[in-house]
Every structure is written in structure tokens, then in C-alpha cells.
Length: 141
Image (cartoon, rainbow, N blue to C red; front, side, top):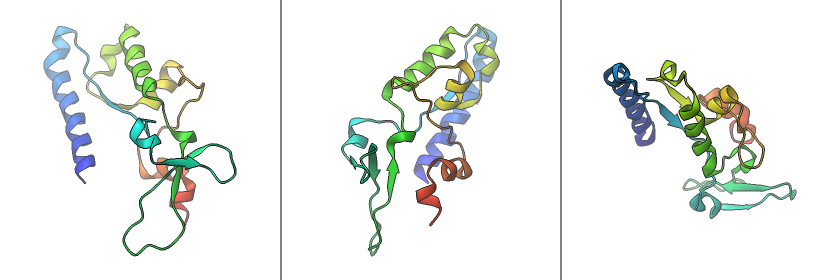
């Protein structure tokens, strides 16, 4: 709940800043990074059983003795991916048309045609349906 509330607050801040600063040519947007491969995230990862990459093991709930749940890092982003989104916005002469809105960094990658450092474009996850499509092992149980 706190995470969602904070995101909503930042989205509202971008909208309000846009209202105040558009007359001065300033663009204000809210960026939503996806699962970023930070040192903390990587410290919670393991090699996948089939050897095809890494996965982040999710903490178990009290009393849960079922199999581990994990997120395949194939959907993750490097820390540079957000930087590439900011750089693409900065270079866009029409960026003021985007002011006041919230964007997943992956949405901007599709819009501007950039990729992450490993050549991938992480999926856009803005809803539970998007998350279910990107993470079927967590949602199809």
C-alpha cells in the first residue's frame, strides 16, 4: 500500500508541476522503472534450475511451505535503462507534449526505440494484467 501511494503521489506531483511549469517550457514526467537489477535485487537471486539465467527468490509468507516463488530476471532492467529513458526524453524536441504524464521506462523504450545495455526491451508492466503476462509463474497458480 505504501509503495502504491508513493507512486500515485509522484504521478500527481508530475501533473501539478506540469501545470505550473509548462508556460516556462519545463517538462515534468513521472518515470516508472521496472524490476531494476540493483545490488540488493541481485543479492536475492539464484541461478535458474534449468541453467537459463537468474531468478529472484521471493520471500515466503509465514506458514507457506509450498515451492519457492521466483521472478525470472529476463524481465528486469539494468540501472542504465532508466538513464536511457531520461536521455531520450531530453533529446526529444517535442517532449513538452508528454508533460504531466507517467511512463514506464519500457514504454519510452518502445516509443523512442532504445534498448537496455544487453539489447533487450523489458516488458511494459502498468497493470496486474501486464504483470500476469510477464510473470505467468506467479499468477497462474
